[in-house]
Image (cartoon, rainbow, N blue to C red; front, side, top):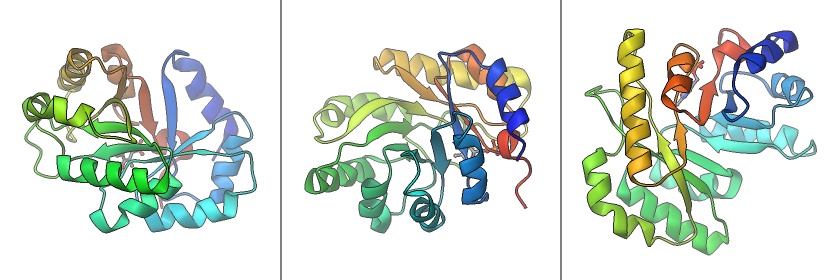
Length: 211
Ligand SMILES: *Cc1c(COP(=O)(O)O)cnc(C)c1O
């Protein structure tokens, strides 16, 4: 983890685009290093791994923790208790459960709904047309703050294919009047910015290779 590298990346990203530093696979010490130079949003994809780091880091300036991994139903309470943002909500059932648990816990997580824009069998997410059909029901759910959509592009696409999928995500978000799009990772962040991303999820670009 080289702080100069982080600052260099940051200088290339427009100030209206947020950086989520994806720290999965990296140690709490590395999180501390870049928190010290101004990064305060960190993303994790496994609850247990994240929670261990949260305990170690709990006495620092508070970090905004984002959950970005596949959500197991039996972990929803813990995720709601320990994360301010959840990017990877991929079904209506899970969203309902997040809402009812948030109500019990007196929480109000910021939610981005994962959408599936291509036929990648490895990736989950809402079908965008289904999302539109369910929209009124979704809007009535309590104790969640729905701000956007999230998408993960399949691996191996050309730059142009990445750009087109990201533009689709942006268009769906706009049609639902959602300001945020969580899209763009270390290999496709430039296309994501061009398409209107508001949250880039950057892991290896910031922290280096995961061992
Ligand atoms: C790991 C991960 C990232 C970051 O990946 P990099 O290629 O290291 O930038 C972003 N989003 C999700 C959902 C991830 O699981």
